[in-house]
Image (cartoon, rainbow, N blue to C red; front, side):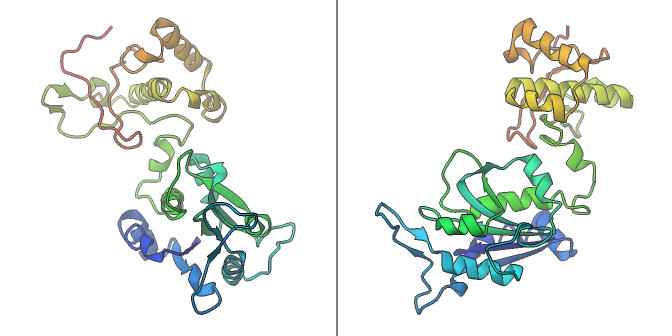
Length: 297
């Protein structure tokens, strides 16, 4: 996969793309990330990339000429594109507040492209003709304002590259983590078995793979209900919830509401339910793990 990023601040990408998993993916040739300074495509002595908006108003607008020149130079075709876009397998992405909210499903979709071209917006945005004639996709990270498109590009590239075949050390890692099936991921534990007053749930030490699978699925359902109930409607289709799982969720809600979903017990299909724990991997918290001697029922 080739990833091109068009920006007026190329130095912002030096650290994120040379370390960790993305750095290794580049070294192994699985992905080729190229940073392009938009000013190299601007005309005149001062290489201006923005100008005042027609009609007045605050702020500046990014000029169309350098952006068109950059994209056409990279893709090798002349805009406006034909009905098939800028070429098979190529997506030209504008990062802007008006775009579709980026999520794991979008990351999986983009990971199948041969080439991604990111245009990092700034100021009051880009000239509308860029959106009309160059862009195939518009994305936003969410309902908040960034200083520019660069931080969004870093996050999106990270999310996409890790889904490229061969990048992750364990292929199932991308399948079982949060959001991959529309639900939040189950709790994770590692050594030591006992840490201070907290211990690892017995089911994870049992060696019974089916019970472990059921426990993890139950915890995933509990966590999603408690923290992101908005995901459950979509998960009914994307994650293929069984009738038993839907009844289980309904029981959780009717038996005490969503506030109990992460501390209640019982499970779907076996008798090994344990209390929930933190999900530092995806939800961003360290979580409170199950205490020794806690009462189950």
